[in-house]
Amino acid sequence: MEQKPIGLIGAMKIEVDAILAALENTRQETHGGMAFTQGVLSGVEVVVAQCSPGKVNAALCAQAMIDHYSPRLVLNLGVAGGIGENVHIGDVVIATACVEYDFDTSALDQWPAGQLTLPGYEEPMRFLPCGQTLAHILSRAAEGLYGRAHLGIVATGDKFVADPHFGDYLQKEFGALACEMEGGAIAHACLVNKIPCAVLRTISDNAHDSETVDFVTFAKSSAEKAQQLLRAVLPQL
Image 1 (cartoon, rainbow, N blue to C red):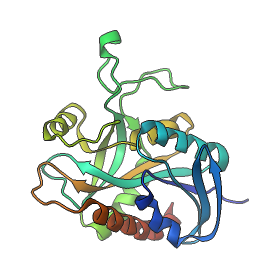
Image 2: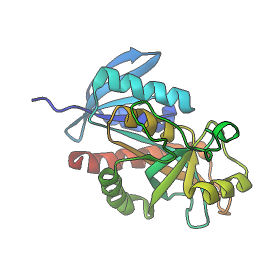
Image 3: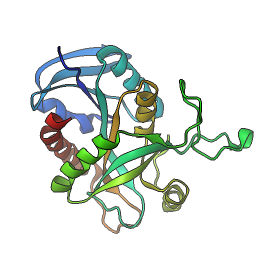
Image 4: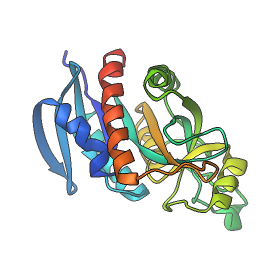
């Protein structure tokens, strides 16, 4: 029986180009205005898509991928802002769970920020779990390539976080190690569809870190590292 593919989603073109360049036996289709490229990487069938930034784009992409390609798991890769003094530029954060920090109905129902209801789930949920076995496999592989890999909460919202005080809030309120704009939405879609999900983010900036980088150069380098990581780890998944 043919094995289902692994889905790979990045928000920006620069985050998926290195992966696309390494694929063999490629074929491409368009769904919802987004290109989905099927191919083989390290002997494993994959489908790759660029969703564009933001939670709605990410959820649309994940659902289209699930509907049209039935992936056995979905990986979201890209860059993120680091949170806390121990998460440095160049580190990688792999989500044990995601939280949609800008979902807030507390004025209506007194639920804490981030707590939401999901179709098919009776109980409300604040932290959207990612595949734990998957996260640990990625973490072990990433440590050899990136140097430092952190497992923890990734905070997702439709906002580019540049304010260190807001980063401190995300750490205090949610225990977040990184913040970005897509992972939680992809985890949300995967959870509803009961498909394992992983979110892997390379840290491009941190208000607590005095080091700075050129974002475009860093994002390209991070994408190339992600490709190397995938080549090593895909046969284990």
